[in-house]
Image 1: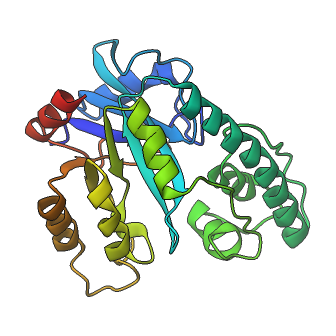
Image 2 (image 1 turned 90 degrees about the vertical axis):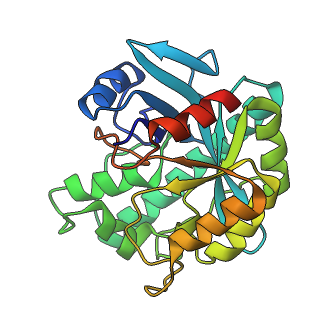
Length: 266
């Protein structure tokens, strides 16, 4: 049973839940604690590191994309207390996101010959573009995954890279602002072993996650063993979550005992 879902997105980035709907979504899933971890953006409705909202524990988190040199990875900061430096970097990244969103929209419209009726804005992410493509009456796309695979996924014909901080800068920013800093979904990267090696500078790693692809493209790899070895080697706390962008929470996360360990750190 999932007690804590520590990876949830809201409309503050590219999710569909507003903050006020999170407690109901959590209760529907039997989840008692949630971390709101919007992409590169602090949530304006959360002014404490950990709060109780309508009977559900809500952790103020953030998911920050960083450049680790060989690949880009995502860091999860939990228990945010706003600092000027982190807020300024999030604002810079959001300005870049707006420009990136504009270019991706233009690329997709040119590729498909349609008008998506979608405006670039802060918090806009590729899932917004993909949903717009699926919903458009003049396209044949039926799923968001198909849009990513054909058009806007990394290296796709309509892809535009973001300007993100380097790994060391990202870690420093999150350490100053958060009670716990971890690596998100380590098995999603092209080189999971290299991503996990970066955990030597972190507190935690996302152990529980609804993976839907082979480890680093290798269907024979034992991803759980890789993550468990990193947890032991670097004395990491295991975290976990559904990476929910929709309204369904609790597809992955922590049991009560593992959540208690995270809560104590926060």
